[in-house]
Image (cartoon, rainbow, N blue to C red; front, side, top):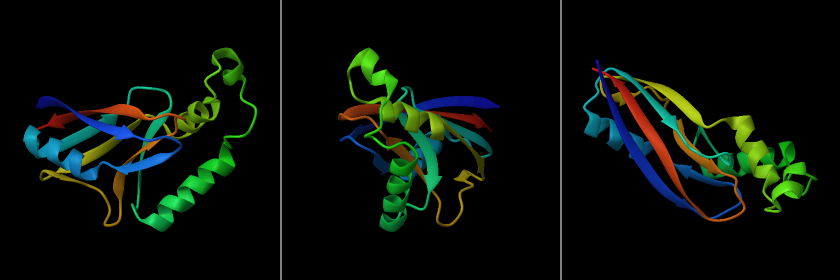
Length: 139
């Protein structure tokens, strides 16, 4: 059993960027030589999240609109009073989706469904450079 750690870096713009990370995760698994085990992805920070979705423009638009309905940007957020940065909504959105994913790896392949991709959602109200920690455990 071995543990390998890698990192993915991406630049985001602002206001609910949704980026497909699937290829970068596959590359990290290839470098690790883990054939059977798991990969855990984690994004440090409290204004971004990770999930899976079909990375298709209609679904992405639907997801962005659903997130806006659940935690609208224009609501009152007490966080904005404390820090004055206007991103209270982004903290709530990120907390609802969560900062990590766990995916089994079998035969060197992610066990994703046919139309399932790994995505980063950056909710912050300013451009960011994001780090995604990729930890692979297995043989």
